[in-house]
Image 1 (cartoon, rainbow, N blue to C red):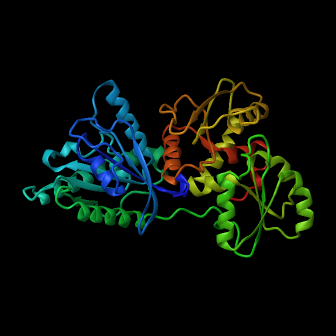
Image 2: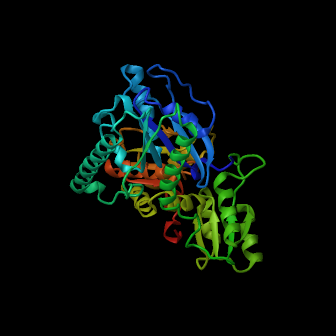
Image 3: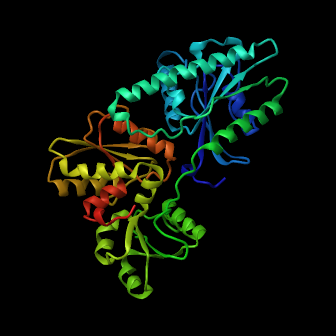
Amino acid sequence: MSTPLGNRKNIVLLGRRNSGKSSIFNLLIDQDKSIVADYLGTTTDPVYHMMELLPYGPVKIVDTAGIDDEGLVGQKRVDKTRLEIEDADLLVYVIDANDFCSEDIYLEDGSMVAKPTVYIVNKCHDSIDRDHIKSKIESYIEKYKQVKEDNEKNNKNEKNSSKEGASKEGPSIVFTDLVSSRQESRKLIIESLVDILSSLEPDRGLIDGLIRPGDKALLVVPIDSEAPKGRLILPQVQVIRECLDMGVMVSLVRDLELKRALEEMGHIDLVITDSQVFKEVASLVNESIDLTSFSILFARQKGDIDHLVRGARHIEKLRDGDRILIAESCSHTSNHEDIGTVKIPNLIRNKTGKDIEFDFSHGKDFKRDLSKYSLIIQCGGCMLTRSNMMVRINRARMAGVPITNYGVALAYLTGALDRVVY
């Protein structure tokens, strides 16, 4: 259960109010965590559960409010559901078979077809015409797929967008009657989820292609006022574990001892540094040794690294009055050494000499209107899945706004970008 959120696939349940989402959620996790009642709008905020989905692996399952919720508060619930849909790796669309009609299946923008989806037709007793429902679902999927393809052809900003996650096979449709066949329903649903998740392209390894088994990696970990007491941060731990898994000989050193370590360790194949000390590390590490950062490793694993590099180079084009969005994927308190709210803004102002304005977002609060920004700088994203990160990159691309991340931006701002391997 200790698997980081960024390494779990997000499974999101959605559908109309009272379609049975919470019942399916409780069935999947095998406990009564979501409230179930014959009352419209019982689920108000997303409910999360971490679990091992055997034989696949670690996942996060999310129950959501109905997408047809009404009123001012209801719209806020729908907005939260849409945020969960954006973050999903796999969608589970729950349909009440007793109240089935074609327009109930999709959100207005047809976003369902952009991700792998399992359709659960709930409360499906023997009198329900299953073939009729199945054919309706399949016909509307084809309709929205065509609309999506036509939109992509007509929008040059989308032509390079990630097609990852689109379901290549036909949709998985499960008919359930939880009253009479709970365990059989659970088995069928889990089999469908595992089949689709197993067919998705696995995430790229953090150091794949940068180093080989038997090579030597040196990790530079500065210990400053932001470093957590008594432990390493998640990106450092994950890189160390991946080095061990690959059979890479890995050593750690503070930036203060880096010069001595380079003199005493002999041959080194790769130096991985905290992005905040790029300038100091680059000045000490011989150009014959490959150099990168923890944040850049996450950028190449979870996002479109080439696009993020192009985004960093846009810094040189900034003008007075431009506005930059700094986006953190998690929330924390900050101090005078904070990388996102202090160090990067100061470096950009010093590098460009321009009067730049900065906005900040945290967690899922990624700004909806990106049109006013000249650049977006996303954090390393260790708490995001690849789907989360690609949604943000593609939203920026569609808005015509360059986007980069902390590590790539810091490499550019400190003059190390041309040296970095990725």
